[in-house]
Each structure stands twice: as C-alpha cells, then as structure tokens.
Image (cartoon, rainbow, N blue to C red; front, side, top):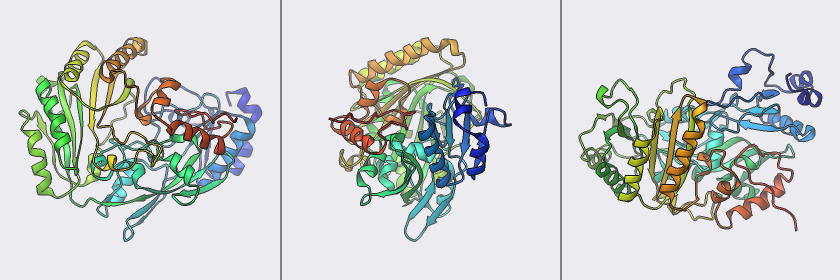
Length: 459
C-alpha cells in the first residue's frame, strides 16, 4: 500500500481474510477505475477500497475505521465529491445490489449499492416506481439520505417521503433497523441529514403505480418570454407533471439541428405520472411556448426517463439555491450570465416544486425546505483544471445575483462550500436537532467526509 499510515494501521491480509467482499489496494488491477468518481478533477488515492458483500462486511469496516482512526469515505453511485478518501479507507457499496419487490404490498427492500436506474428498471417491470433524481447512475444511498428531488416530486414528493424503514450501520459498528417507531430520531435524521449518521445498507421504499406515463425531453428556443412563461405554466400544471428546465448551451446532439449547437436553448425534462390523454393535454401549453426545436415527449415506461449516459467525467463548478419566484429580472440575469461565460457548457436549471413535497410538514424530516417553490442550480462545465478559478468565480457571482441574499440550498447539490452553506441547508431548529442526534450516534464524527454536521458540544 502507498500510505505508510494505513500500512501500519491496517493489515490487508487480515482484511481480506475477514471481509467476504472485495478488497482493492493500489497494487491491484482495477484500482484506478475503482477510485474514479463521476466528476473529473478529483484525484484521490485511498489506502484501501473495500466493496462489501453484505451489512456484516460494512460493520467490520466501520469498526476498523473507528479503531484505527483511519479516514472513512462512503460511496454508492460515485457522484459525491466526498466518496473517495485520500490515504484512508473507501467503503464502496456498489456490489450490494439485492432487491426484494413485494408487488402486492407495493413495497421494496433495496440494498444501497443499486443505482436509481437499476432500481427503477426493476420495479418498472411491474408498473411501479419510487421517485429518485434525474440521473440513472446516482446511487440510491446518497440521493435518499439527502432528500431526493426528481421526476415525481410534485406527484409523490421526495424520495424520503417514500422511505418506510432503513438498515444502517452506526459508528459503533452496530446494524440498526430504524423506522417511525424504532429509533425514530435517527430515522428522522437520515431523511435529509445525509451520510452523517452511519452507512445505510438497505432501504424499504413505498412503490407507486406508474403504469401510465408521458415524458421525455422538450427543446425550446431560449428567450426571456419562453423561460418566464415556462415557469408560470409549470407552477400552474397539475401535480402529476414535474418539470426540470435547463437553460443551457445546446450540446451537439444528433437530433438537434446543427445551427442550434452551442446556442442557448431550453432543454426541459417533462414527466407526467398519470393518464396518457391527460398527460398530452398537460404538455400542450409548453409546446405552445414556441416552435419546439426537438420534441421527444411521448407515452413511455417511466424508467426510460433515465437516458443512457456517456463515459464522461466533467469538471464542474456549481451552486444550488431555493427561490420563491423567477421574475423578469431573474430571467434577464440568467441570460446575462450565460452569455458572459466561455465555459464549454453552462446552464441554469429551474425546478418548480410544491404540491406533494409541500404537503409534508417542514419538521417531519431533516429536509426542511418544504415550502420553497423553485430550486435553481447554476453550473459551468469545463475541461482545463487551470480555468477553475474563473468558473468558480462565475458561478459564485451568478448564484449571488439570483439568490438575492437567501443562502438556503439543497444538501445533495452542495459542493465544497464551507460550514456556513451546510448550516443554511438545515434552517431553524433543524441544525440543532441534527447535531444533538449526531452526538448520540457518532460522538467522534467518524462520518465526516460529507456535508458535515459536527456533533453538538455537551453542556
């Protein structure tokens, strides 16, 4: 192993003897692939990567990290910027993919190495679904623990609103089954509090009937009128319709006319979870906003909303925020900033929320932004790491111009932005309650490679 600290603290031969899953060191074939995460520009070299076979393996590795003091990183899908340790232990859940579907009860037990796409395809074979995010390769562990804002948010709420129970290995190495009745404080905390409280190994989800679904991509001209009207129509739409509007430079996709490549367009994900005829009616106001550049919206299985992904590891600068309106001034700001950037791809993403998400009380889970109307994300994707400072400054200024002093944000979309931003993701009494629960279950902050909530100080 490359890290002398890890070599002295951990016996790899003993680890391989006791762990049923895979143990990968820097000397092993496949190490570089195993340490690669979704985002480019992250080049960390863990001392050891363990891919557990089951919860017992997870418990063993958590106990080992606690006893040796080694840094512990946890990953499932590999989209988190914190999912790889430098010199320590990376616990990679991607081999834990067991799924038990109870079609009659409309529930599923899913191990957390499954991706959103894998889970959705499997349950979709029965005409059922649980809402996750907008990317199929994201692991269900991370997205669930942070909240889960996706294609079904207005109809069925967040992913955590479908979470019935969880199995989680806490810092003491114990595997706990938690739900609304058992360890209810811990169950409250993991519904939005991220990976601060342990390693979730299995989730029990509620399943919804989505045998009928209309969705896909709708490309529209990017004009101030189109964007402003899109938001108004999305807010007025029935709750069956959830939308994600990306105002962005058009990629060179084969179905887009060449003259639009590199120009600003609206690339909208349209997701109607309901009757086909009603879904087509709900799409009509959006198609009428301007002559569609490309219209790929159609009746389809819900699982097809997760499009095939290229083997692409973007370097990205990004910021997230909640706002309660996107007025004409905000639209003008979006155009001004997108046109001023020279990033390979730049975007402002607008997600209209509300309906089912807003019906849950703000203090029912650790996700406390129930009443917020719109989530906005801004991003610059680029190739040259030396341009980082320029693009980071651009997204910082862009976000500040749109947020108008509101520091709130969605924890799953935060990057490395400091403690102040993490606290803003947990407003009001949410932060204090999470810190108190953290002290009870992880007093030494073993689970700190995340958007970290330190344990409350006693006294």
